[in-house]
Amino acid sequence: MKRILLTGLVAGLVGIVQAQDVPARFAETITRTDLEKHLRIIAADSLEGRDTGSPGQKKAARYIAAQFANSGLKPIVNGSSWFQPFELVKRSWGEVYVKTSKGARKNANEDFYVYGLTSMPDETPLDVVFAGYGIESDTYSDYKNLDVSGKAVLVFAGEPKNGEGNYLVSGDTRSTNKWSGQPSWQNKQRLAREKGAKAFFIVSEDTPDAFAIKARQMATYNRLMNRVEFKDRSKPESATNTAAVFITPALAAELMKIKPAKLTQLREKISSSKATTAGSVKPQNIALKAARNEELIQTENVLGFLEGTDKKDEVLIITAHYDHIGISADGQINNGANDDGSGTVSVLEIAEAFGKAASEGNRPRRSVLFMTVTGEEKGLLGSDYYTKNPVFPLEKTIADLNIDMVGRTDKDHEGKGDYIYVIGSDKLSSELHTINELANQKYTQLDLDYTFNDPKDPNRFYYRSDHYNFAKNKIPVVFFFNGVHADYHQPTDDVDKIQFDKAEKVARLVFHTAWELANRENRIAVDSNKQ
Image 1 (cartoon, one colour):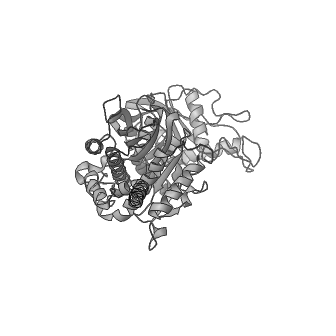
Image 2 (cartoon, rainbow, N blue to C red):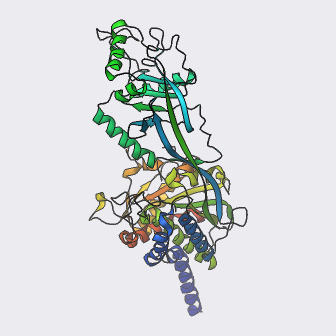
Image 3 (tube, rainbow, N blue to C red):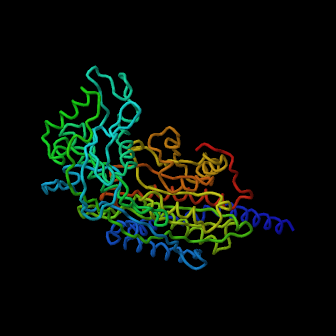
């Protein structure tokens, strides 16, 4: 009898121990070897940097979907697809130039630079009208009796002073916020557009060397900031839009067919006479072309679904972005192993661990959606699209765990132990923060660094990855991040620089946090508002 009781007690204890070890057992299936195996495919040269909408991004999407299928997940988009497709439009500058009345061609970012957007796809003849400082106020006006409708307006930067140093608009030594300083060109541009102008030229106050530097900077900026936006939200750039074309005094004089000294005299006469000289120069015919290229981009998020049991209507989401920046202008491939191949393969391994648990009778109580999103590098567009077109109601989404750039060491942690920056865990839910900390204490013992969780942190990382689109919708989030490094957005961000032992620990921490969220009795409370 005693032997039977003892045997039963031992069996019971073994059962308890096994039950307690369930998450640890499946977390151990997340290995550095498998992370590396996946990443050598995701970040291979053959995928050409996974630029949004590119063939390489599509190859990555198919690979991710295949891995989700192998892990026992189900396609969920429209009931049968792994992919949530959407359309983007990429707009960039094409050919942009000005021709003087003598036919001399002046090119953008060499002889002038442009702020703002406009669309003149064809070379368009225009009369250029001198409009003084381009100001209209109760005390001073450059537009009185001046017709600029359908024409190009050329104005001085800033606002005029008299010989005593007083501004003509304010009447004293104080300049106005509207017509002086950095934002003044926008006010002048807007006024010219309201007057019917089709183009707007502003004479820079910079030295020739400073102007040349700004023109080169704008060339770089325009290449980097070609706009990508949702097709259904974009607005056509009509020919009525008016960009600000910044020009040198020398080019201004050339456009108006006067000598540079005459341009100086026009400025000085305004000061001495305390009256505008707008319209005192005969309009000259020039030509302007400002072509905008437009490219339609088809792209997609990849979703794999694991249905829960008794609380299956509640959904936990685990995310990473799988796109990167593609090929550089010089032909080098940006493989994005760390950004964010590392997060993508972490999602694959966590999905596999949950899938194995489910296949062995340990299906989570809540459903789990594993989602690798596209368009992060273009402005968090994939996660934005999902939160505006959710497969599951956002009010049923309990949390988002987002992984972006793990498995590297930044300068602040060189020579120290394994760590992870934790961002956002306490912003909306104190319980989520505690769950993540307890999971780390029990299983992974990483140094949880909250430096970037500080609202005053100038990097603002909380707003710079896909979790933020969930946080905006009051869904609790945790962002797991190892920080930036010299290879960020460079062709040198390669697989061989990933520390897979560190990535393994982070992925296991995310798994354990997810396991608790998916299996606890009560959904975590949304009891904070620290955004």
